[in-house]
Amino acid sequence: DAGVTQSPTHLIKTRGQQVTLRCSPKSGHDTVSWYQQALGQGPQFIFQYYEEEERQRGNFPDRFSGHQFPNYSSELNVNALWLGDSALYLCASSLFVNPEMNTEAFFGQGTRLTVV
Amino acid sequence: DAKTTQPPSMDCAEGRAANLPCNHSTISGNEYVYWYRQIHSQGPQYIIHGLKNNETNEMASLIITEDRKSSTLILPHATLRDTAVYYCIVRVVIAAGNKLTFGGGTRVLVKP
Image (cartoon, rainbow over all chains, first blue to last red; front, top):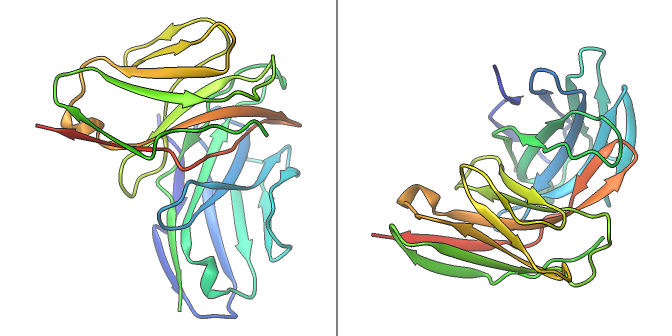
């Protein structure tokens, strides 16, 4: 059973460019969340997708956008990259049952984005 | 979001139990306590979670105080591979599932 897979594993971009990161959830999962982890800090919630819609968003600008496909996979897009966007981007998947049901989130290994 | 407070770091001897404390004094009645760990440059790994009762699985035990304002993660026999950053998280229920709010975590170093 494949876990959460992310691609690419590493990426170098130039300031002002755009980037797309991809995530395939764990088999059987239907909800995908994205997190940004700067060096030495804990992951910060960006947004969550369920049923192909953004359901909740953290404190991130509109430059960060996403998409979820019918097969539950997801993309994270970042436009007009800043140097400060350099971070490890983590994807987590879970299964939504109802808001009260515990669904542990499984994380991928992340994409290391470096903006130069 | 309910905040958590953890010591920034701690050392543990290999083979001994590691007890990791966490304070979450503003936790709401229906919020769960989750523990994740992150080994260097990898994605966070789920360890255990609980609401009111103590919980145990193959990785660890979770002890939650009766007032739910604090908890302790216990790694019964620490190994060198348990060296990682351990995050105590209060699970916030949102529209579709949950949002995990990570703090700074506790950096645990298991020494031979």
